[in-house]
Length: 144
Image (tube, rainbow, N blue to C red):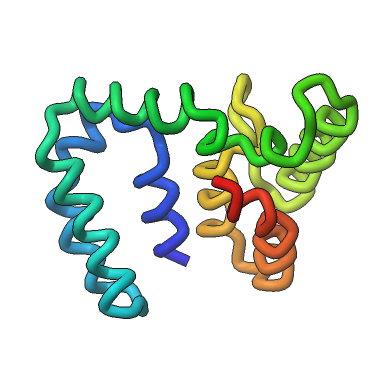
């Protein structure tokens, strides 16, 4: 489950604190049960992050995830049209799902935010619950 927390950290907006801990994140890659190619991709990404100062990394994050709709980290963005009422119902259902499973979504955060979903998966011990959530999120995750 640590892997999901790790991925959530990599997908969050890169704060100054995140940038200060990139060396620790780089060391963590080898702890995961991943293929050599998967580890290389993660290590290369972290090395790229280390090559930028915090401001440049933050600008790249905004360009990639906030200004490029195909890379939006809000899953319902990929499943529904902007004004589709089903999107709101899905968000409400997802928020209730988290609450029912003992996970509170911070005020102002939408429950379909990929790092939030990964954070939930990292904390939930019920493999049936996390497996179901990841399976249902799969089509939208593939879009990102």
